[in-house]
Length: 526
Ligand code: C2O
Ligand code: CU
Ligand code: CU
Image 1 (tube, rainbow, N blue to C red):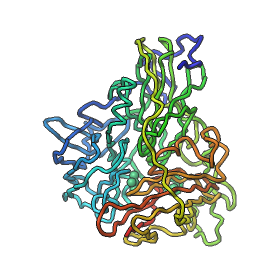
Image 2 (image 1 turned 180 degrees about the vertical axis):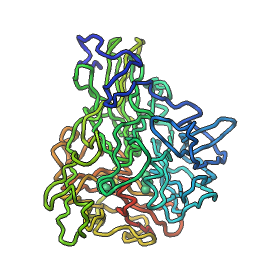
Image 3 (image 1 turned 90 degrees about the vertical axis):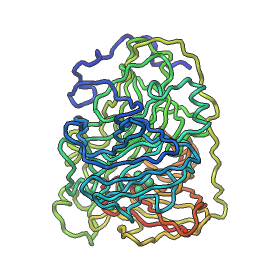
Image 4 (image 1 turned 45 degrees about the vertical axis):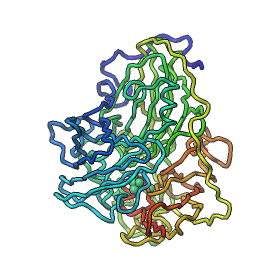
């Protein structure tokens, strides 16, 4: 499988470690941090052992300076120390995590993407006070994929996640093993997680614009630091990308040093491997979403440089404050004249507004290896949810009286406006008003399938598969879906519930400032 863009080119890459502004920060490129079996993001396979996970302030001496974290999840297992450990899990495994809150705010851990019962879901109805602990005890019932965990105390989620409380969860299975052996992938060498987070200098404090648009940073850190490069060989690499940013959406693509676009192969999304690989030129990745991609460098020349970038796009922040009922709040309104789109570049995101192009990671081809492998034509099985006879639930996303809302409501703890019959299949039609902005809608407890998109913005066209408005990233199991202004997205959910008794979950926007502001609704399944 040749990559045409590699032909007839010579080295245009910067020397390793040289000062550079290719990633827009004027900073110094440094090697990408690749997680190992301990330390930051280290892979912790505890088997059936009970582990202690502590949320703790991060001493300044240990803070990963570039990212400016001030908190971390800490763990220790068999003599190894971990910061923000990647929990390596297996289907059917029992997980026992003794969570200790050593930060000075209430918190709770949510296992994003895992279908656990309400008690273990950590959705904020129960929080752990400073100094207290909480024992999680659940079985892994999910498919293999890259999931993650982060705090979920209502109103405090965004700040805690931003300060450094997050970690990955990697669930493995036989399909994963088959893929790794077919492509000769080694975790930590040519299979590498990329955790994207945009960072601002200073700590976490929000103004009205931040609460309306989400908290955007000026630099993008990957695995804890901005401006990373990775020395690579002429073979296939697998990148498992998690957008752990509070609010920013990326339009991810690859290009050669001469600007030529390089396709990648999409193999998975939030809920694991797609049925079949799919060639893509780009993919949008909203807050909390994951994509799993293969980059084939086997025809690259030594000295070639490939850049992972976020392409320019229209961020479509078009909320207005034209509602007659909106309170007159000049600090919140200065950026939007009634009835006119907000100019997202004038006030927000500093040097790096949402939708601006930026190089994120350089791959520097340094080594030739003999590598011949092809991507398996079948990756996994994805049974389509049968929606014949399913009831449809309409959901509207909008802004009024200074707050983002779902069906005109702001979240109230303990209320469950969405009541679902246990074991039912439902379709949800999520409609985002045109005078809105994109919202990354996430459901706890259940994965879903995107079955249709209508009136999507034109900029989604390159990702389309030419069927019911669907995008390539809609072809697998999802737990988070980005809904653009004016767009209607229909999803199918199978509420088959393996737990006795009613369970309560939440459905919310994963722009963490929107979530904290109440763009969330309780869901009761009984
Ligand atoms: Cu990742 Cu309710 O969130
Ligand atoms: Cu979640
Ligand atoms: Cu939102």
